[in-house]
Image (tube, rainbow, N blue to C red; front, side):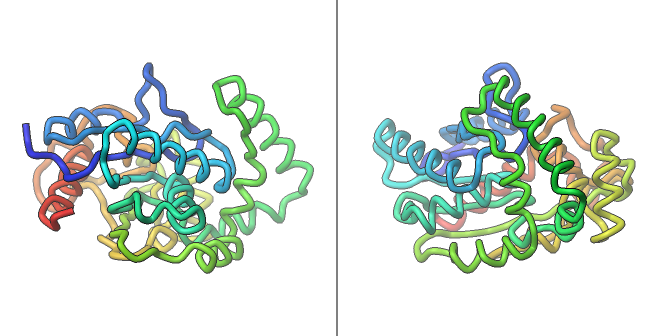
Length: 270
């Protein structure tokens, strides 16, 4: 058991999934961080809620955790869209005094040129597909899924506007990570979107190119030390196993990447 972090750690999921007791979004990661002494909490926001709605939910969640634990602040690790939800809560909703650090994992800070092109398809078609996804997510527990609106926030123009409205806040330590698969077939679950994104934007993690994930204190483009690389699903340990048994440069087990993030925050006295 390690000494943990000075503050509780909030894990904020991305789009398309919900926090669930039956299927933990973060795989083996929470257990590893608890071994290090971290006190883990989860966001619990809607899977496909808007940034504004999810940001408000997370602000309330932070206040609840602070009240429950007596902590003055929290550390936050956010995956994918969860990073945008948290940036909104910190900057627009004034939660900066309650957040010690925000680590974003493959968050689309700069939008997606692929989404720019996607939205040039007939609008009724995009809305129809988004509407079907909303129904499914509502059945799964989302209170207010807004998939079409969320997709529109991923355009490069919307990202520029969001970034101007939600700058980094003093007193919060920000850092960001990006990831890539080595081949589009590295993750068959993300084969189709990965292939499309590669056509328009080059190497990616199955959904997002590294350039979009770059934010303050960028830690680099992470990849595995095998021929597979790291996909958007691998980033949160969806398969519950090591990426590879090989040793050498690169990440062999995503769990240890998160352990390294916590160790670095500890070393910084955060």
